[in-house]
Length: 110
Image (tube, rainbow, N blue to C red; front, side):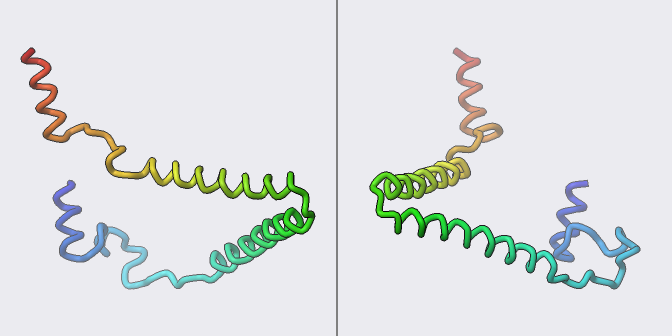
């Protein structure tokens, strides 16, 4: 099954053949702008509220509110840095690699 999928992808550039989905044969779905409009509207609303919040914090002039604003930015930066670090390849599993299999064999021999 996997070989057929790979062959289909290499030959057609798609994992499915047109004859696999007869109801869509020769037709393509037109792109609708509703999703794009929805995400733009929500992003505009949310970002405007965040920017208004930060503007009010900075304009207040209070040292506590300024440190709170800086703390939020630092916390967000550290959180994103840690999340990106979780997706690095060196953090992945060693299952199935040759080195891991060699280690298992040497442990069994000992």
